[in-house]
Image (cartoon, rainbow over all chains, first blue to last red; front, side, top):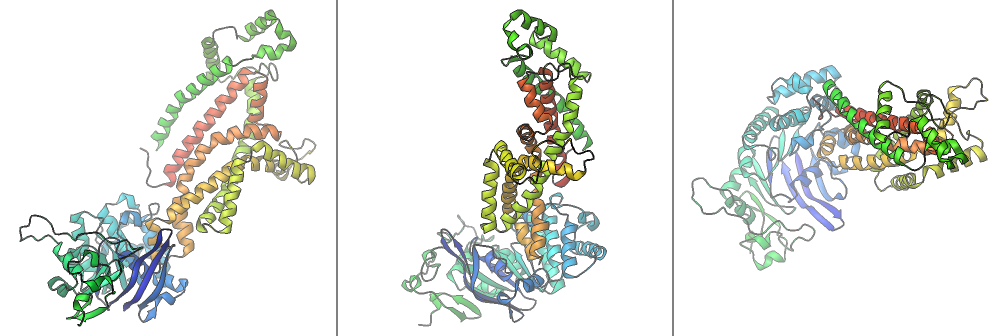
Length: 318
Length: 320
């Protein structure tokens, strides 16, 4: 239902062109949950905002296609996009405190969306809003409708955010690190809630995270992103059992293992490259244990290997 | 909230007392005295000066004078003018001047808000557009042009050359039955001049505040819900951007009142500012003290109103 084709979103800053998303292709099927995984700054959020067409200056989507139900969102007018945002495609943001407007009540912000997209009148919207708050397991919804974001705890705020996002039953939900800003105990509760709601609503989900545990818990398929590119995508089991791309392998090794005693945690040496001047060839080659001469010369093409799609020269035919 | 306001009012008492002690000392220690003004050339005669000083009680030590003045004030008596209109009750003198000054400053404030907020918002929404650049230039002009010069230029253009507006005063005494329109015509130049600095400052402030708010996550989140750009800017962003303005307005009151001193003098506006200038020249101690006290109380009350209003408009702030 959603397919990105060679999407490129660049930021034209004074320091140079930041290639935040540099040719991303991925797809999400009906009712499927895709995990988009990568380090901070690799372009996950920009990918999500590009799908919503919410990239702000100095950023621009310079190439590619975003097919939603076979229609290219990049060719839609701003007016058409507004009808899609919040109704067809909704988004949950990382930090519920900064993503809820501090000077309006939860009720204001929730009924606003209902009245806009479902054309409910004020009374109906309030009733529906209370129902939705109950759906995300918030206690005494009538009270919360009249409360401001700062009066709620972190977990309650994120539940309210999820309520706003799901209020119009979107077909696609983009969740941008929905648990990162929360306490570990609250994280588990929110994950549980998301899981339950995803089953109930049967929506497709693009789940952005850098937490592989969250991926294992919720996703059907995984796409691994590095420096603006998808380096590997596959079924969630396949990724965890047989990672193909050296970056994916390194990520898996970096997960602390309970049953093995180790002196130190495994890390990936080096850091995310500067996206104004990324390394030539494969962008991961300076940090890659398996780097070969060809890696710094040619950009690897995506290939299909045992149900994985991998962009790595290790799997070149010759 | 009520207890907060009461506490603030109680704190105001020592504050106003402090203002009165400092200004009383400065006024009485400054060179010149009512005697030198009242006696004119005869002020060269030390005996005449001593007689006047004794009459006015100015021969006593300054703290004695202060406490005498204070005890009168507490009984609601501002004293008797010793310079301007000799023997006139300061209460009456000042009472007639309060309303014109309030009328002028409040008009200036309203005018600057009404002009500055839309200009600031539009500058932010269309950052670096032609409009934004023009607004920036206009704001710097508003801040840097001296009030007295601007007032004179406007009077020259609109009163002398074009004859559209009256050149001074609050109302033309020749008009027997003045309408509100007559009053407004007199108000335009002084209110505009007094409002220019605030207008410029507020416009710059709103622009900066709005740009800051437009970068916030909740604005992206609002857009992601499909809200129109209008709703995003004028509902979600504007309220957040205007909250800090409440404090700015409270703080702008001293500037407005001191600006009124100049503007009232240049525009012949019969308010407290012009009275203050005459009182200084006449070394009229009781009138000067009365005005300093009034200005002080107005500023303190203005700040209190700003703080209370802030709690009222911002749900995150509650005083208990």
